Length: 189
Length: 115
Image (cartoon, rainbow over all chains, first blue to last red; front, side):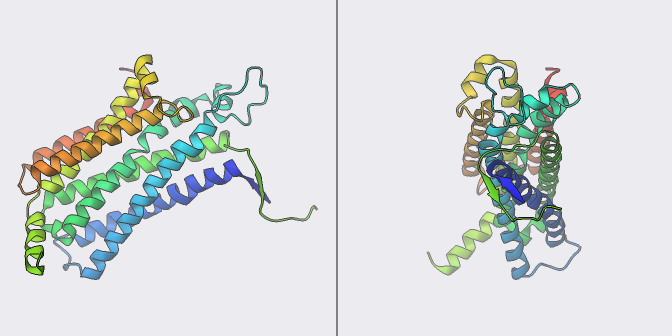
């Protein structure tokens, strides 16, 4: 069982940061809604502190996801092959564009993903800043609360689009190559 | 600063909506700039070259760096202007939502191709 360095970075970007961020989104939305709702008892300082830490963790995950995507994985994805290269396996963008049945994964999927993904860290950074400042007092600022919840939903949508297309693109044209890391030695059957 | 004056200043900052409004509007501006610069780089070879600040990543590096710079700068300025004020939040959030919606539309290739 082995994995290449490029494959490992793609895994860290997509599963390590991206998927974890997506998982965290629903928790953030529920807790934000609950702790700042006038229909529920006032949150304790410990609950408020927990949500602040939770949101700060999401901010870190979101920024690491887009930064590793744009500056580590994406350059490998868009690498230009030397002229005359027949095997495009190491050049995912060109591999996708080489066939009408897969070109849409780049021209629609990657073109949307590479930009829309950035709405997630911007949105969740704002939501976190607002909650750090107002905390449970957000229940007294209805419009701020609505905006924070809406941007949390937008962040989830942006990360969802990026995650979906990232997974599909990597299925059709995996970012692979570089040094091979041996994870375990299996037995041939 | 004494503990009592610290408490008073925190309570005052949290009792106005200005700094929250600044964060919300600037996030809308930052998101919109991502879409706007993405379309601009797609339509104009000159802007595309200008935004290509890190060659391995291509114009995406400039699109996002410029948008983040504008987002943070607008946040800083709006926070300074609004920090101890109450602003008309309904209008501010409506503008932020429109900008956020436009950013989703502008980054969506079939819509960007129509422009």
